[in-house]
Length: 88
Image (cartoon, rainbow, N blue to C red):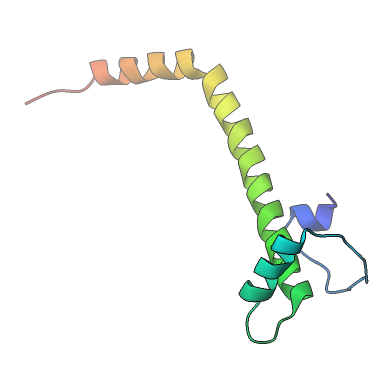
């Protein structure tokens, strides 16, 4: 992934390419792509959404790993803070 994509910036330059899709998937794309039937726009939006989700999933996994590595220390800190709490 390029630095521009990682920061959420997508170039508007288009490059013509060719892909092979299953017939049933192409039928769904045609049904879902709206009244203008622009497959390229539909596929581009779908890929962008997928890439964004994969990026979020990776970040969430990194965050969870950091939290898990620090869990004992964070739990001990929370217990310590609770000892200062005064209950009515």
